[in-house]
Length: 460
Image 1 (tube, rainbow, N blue to C red):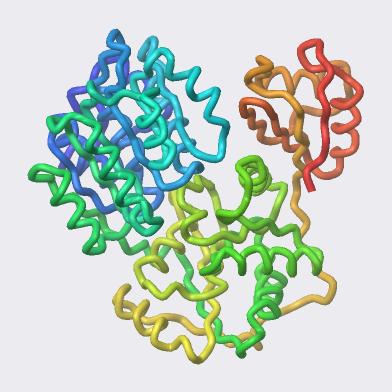
Image 2: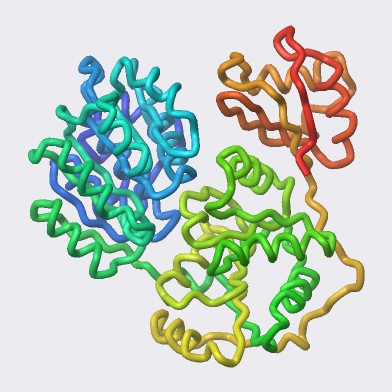
């Protein structure tokens, strides 16, 4: 039997200690297949679905080869979206805890560039970012890649879909030819093979099964009359009553229109798309992740980088024209041993898309009639939590413990009523159970955090 324990790899004691502290006991298939070659310095071309553990695979590789005494950029990770970049940075920092003096920074658009210039005055070891902002720093000469050892392209297919090919090639022109290049992609179109051929040297091809375990994901299709999608969606929500559901649309305008319609009908729905400001995107994600919002509506591009555990339901408001994207969408439920539900709406004119999905997954599709849905007039999905936004964050030296202490010290608010706490540079978010939301808002508004008064408001 093949060894899958991380201890079987030739890693440093510090890195093994970090991995152990995060309770990563056994390698996932993509980690087991790619890490030995990554550690040997080989280029990798890996196809792996969302939730496969690919971030830890390349992060462990970067940290293993890191020289913490050399303050130059040694590794660069390019991501298609800010959300994915933040997620990759967060996981890499967690793995780097036991390695002293490791500097990791995130460079993304949608945020002021001034503070980024300041953080680059002393060059970091690892940079994670989006192509546009990375290129801007290279042009301003605030970022230098002359000492780069490893380049990672994460979600490379999505970066190409978003039109970043030219930016990526211009960034690569600024780095040494002698380097290790790791390319990770959820799908494997011809464009990926072409870019791999251009920028990699004899890459090891790693393929992890892209289809999902049918025993863990219950997949159901509903044919709906033309013009009745939203009405059918409401019936589905009333029938299944999911605590959280991620709904996919093919266009960003449709995301916002659907969110508005559902809100008018009393559902707490939020849209995630490219037209939102960074602050708005952050607040949408925070509310969904901490169970203050029941429904998140997103496009495929906007959903990349979402790290949502225990997501019970994924709904395709429209079928994707690409069956591989369909499989990628439904793979966001039924993770980590949990069971999931994937529901898809289609009209009769979309039969060809249905056949393509059936052929791609090499399995029949289950079609149910909408008449079987049990609805209840006036039923609403009320989120169990409410998010409070505090006008101070990391720059104000606020920690999660400070917020928890402000809410519970010398008050009768039980700690068990307080949920997830998220802290950004300038804002903090705390989830509290719905029945105590007014009490918690009053405590924070009238009281102090670390001896200071901050503005506090409830997110809607």
